[in-house]
Length: 295
Figure 1: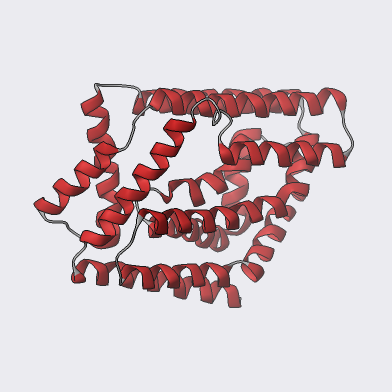
Figure 2: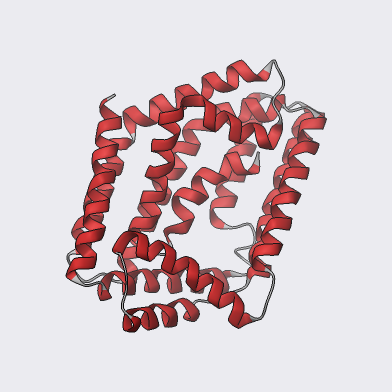
């Protein structure tokens, strides 16, 4: 449940990190995959978190189809325009402020989708049974164990090395191969970003516990839909800004700025051939968005 409320937002906007484009493109990729597979993939993914009952299955699938239809009709043309703007940015010097501006744009678009889905999310939240909330809690705990295995191991240098490898994987997908000199510059920018995986784990755990607390309150108190919807909206808003932001403002701000600086650097040091590689990939996503919007 936590993931189906926030995963779209996180996957679509929080990873603005590497490049302005990687952020938007990850979202378009997910959208295209979702449209191609209809309710099957999205339903299967959500079901892994809440284990739908027979009564829930038909209307959940109907809500998924309706949301995808609305999204295709009203959002994809805007995504194509965002991607086209990114193409234009690639042809000039990019600043960290430019990256953060694109981040804000995409975040706004992602939150718009969540706002549209709030009535359906509320209906589902109100319908969950105690055993489903327990299933969700177990799933989230499993995800956290995986996070610990992947990120909370090794020295600082080892963690930075793994983070740099992730950066290069995405950068090379969009721009192609980088020279040793370029790699050294990217590595320096990657390492300059503050790293605190323990804090990120604490943030996600806090977000999960707030969600479980809200769902259990719904289950016991059975509030009216308008009251429940307000609680869901409040939860989404708090999640989008980090529950622990006030206590850790310096870290989150520095992390965002460092990531934006790294993204700008990758774009600015790219050769004409590398930028042409990225432009070609961007154009493919633009065409995909425009084609899907017409269906």
